[in-house]
Length: 378
Image 1: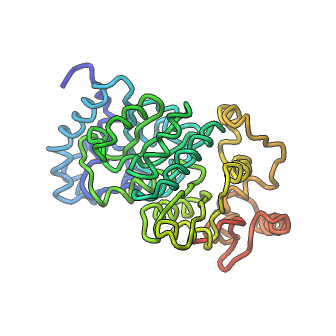
Image 2: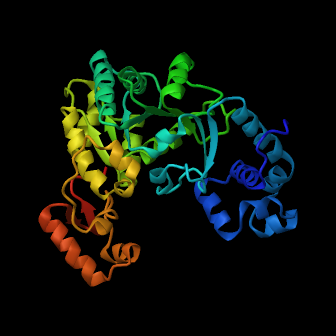
């Protein structure tokens, strides 16, 4: 391996632990909460066993991890705009970091600053009809002109057309892949991937050499929604990967938007179902921008100078009441005592604030607690 490669102990240790078999994002975070990755990978086999690692995992850390990590560094230094970001990096996307099961490591090719800007996901069917494809291209292009970065999965159909619409409009777009960044999938989107890397960014949580696998794509979907303020579903069947993305969005407290379609169109049934279950019905771009305006007021982006500049076209004159409390109320019912614990606000004050928010129409009391109005569960 070239001596010029970044071989810092910290990053090498993060990657070694990250690639260890059967250590998912949650387990990774639990382990590093007990001990630092550097200390873990440098521990003896006996110490690793005491920490709960099995023989296969210990063998990987001691004998195989080095090769996989070196390949990551070689990938990084083979291109001019390639980054490896960990949860500890300032450049790691803030919204994604707040989600459950946030990837401990992401690989980025292109303009990584795109990941720090407000994003909206646009997803839909791989086999959409021409009207759906044109809608995706048109909506994505128009939304990008409102200083939103448009995020999708670079799949055939709606995803690809959404990315293309942004690129044609001169905006920025992020593609989240279900494989390593050395193996663009689908193959016919090689040229599209190059355009995205120039005008936006390609993102993956997988080793750069990882080939496409079916089980990777649901994981990819949670990153798409996790990066975004909301998800727009343009066209989707009832059993669609896009609905998985929408479900993740709700679980992460994001807004879900859907464009309705004919009851006779099989690929519109998923969107119609989402609307029936509480998603925001979208007929024009302003339907999304109006809702995003509300989301921006209470999201963490509000305190960011960069975001205020990015949303200069969205007039945020009115402050929502009790933003700290409201920011912790999402799509899933949350009890009063949990809200009090998260916000460090006395229970009695939380109840008073919730009552006022309910009277103003911002939250709804449901079985098990409160949800934000318009964010029904799927």
